[in-house]
Length: 216
Image 1 (cartoon, rainbow, N blue to C red):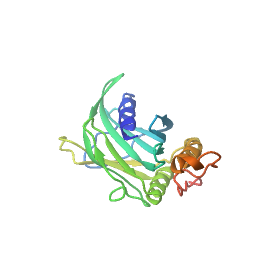
Image 2: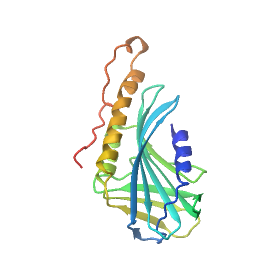
Image 3: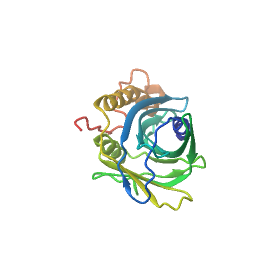
Image 4: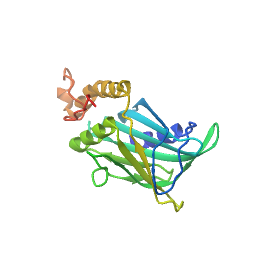
């Protein structure tokens, strides 16, 4: 699942959204755009909320993808985020830059010490968890809005870059995520059950305990 998300995240960076490049300061982006995506492969099923932030005329691009899904082989539930940055070179080209030490922080959740981290050569950072309680806290923090995304650009000398996301995802984006996760529930339950018990197994909540806050 991680490989699929990394490739997908990089491809999506080729959109033309720009972000303030202020160094070592909290940036309040003028453009905050949420969307949804679902990914289905032979290995995994994944539901996503995709966030683009921008603050023209700066050239830096930041994309944040929150994901929740499961491995089809064993039904293990995974949730977390992918974050990537790029420089917008032309109206149809953006070059991915290397980042590290990424984090999400809010009043109710911090990814540091709770999500695992994987830094990839393509410039992206993945932070997953398979703990249902941690996943629940993380997802609800994103759905509530008012959180900070931070990362360090390798070799830039600019220090930590912090983007303050005040707006929560629109209701339709949250609803789409919940519907997507509900549609995966039967498959996750099926993968977790013995082969002899799979026929006729009723759907259960994806993640066996993930509780999405719908009143944000």
